[in-house]
Length: 290
Image (cartoon, rainbow, N blue to C red; front, side, top):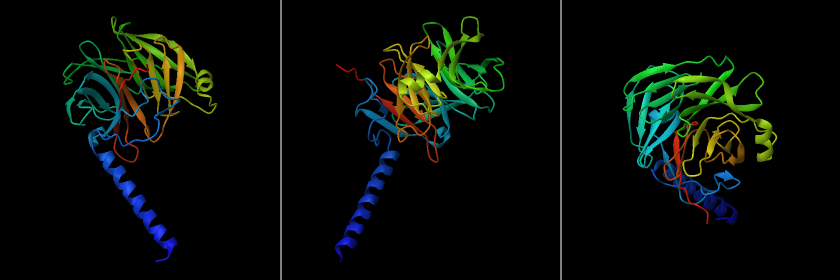
């Protein structure tokens, strides 16, 4: 056999073998199966080899929000069904409870006793702690050109932060609104606004259009983390909206990040909606840099 032909055949076998290994990793719960850095620059305390990924089952292909409940349990929502999913982040096993009708649900958080689910219009649905019944709904008229995908529970201030994805006709900032949990009412004016110009400057990329898809407060460092599927960035902010850092996301790891949450010890979970495939859940263990 000619050397050139032999080389081609050996290369083809190697490619097939690599693809088979990759597919196996993508299908086995707990398999790391992802190479390279997830964030650029490296994200302090999270960019290490101690990370895991699982492939989610079909009902969570369109996962649109998550929140941490306990070490072996997350709550999740998808963007169609009026169901709350209780998800084991290590195995992908889940149970589901129906609370309402179909809608464009975008995020879910757990407060002291209840869940709050948000749809794309910024309407909130208060759901019982077992996920089986809707207790109340809250609506606010934000306007036709407003769309929301990010809901954050700010425990210290006893409030919910609603961060807009589409923030008006000529958007040039990321705006956050407040739902006060004590009075169960919306605060009309934005509580903070982060200019795209500031995001671009820290990311050193003038082309970024940051449209948030998820957010959560890290209980270890007290920072607000906001992730954007459109724009492929992760922002670190103070809870009052002061922009501290911007990290670009590896699109191979985050094809469409739609959920983020933290454990009590700082471990970070990020969920990807399925893009021509199944949804995934990544876990990044909190490892303080000494």
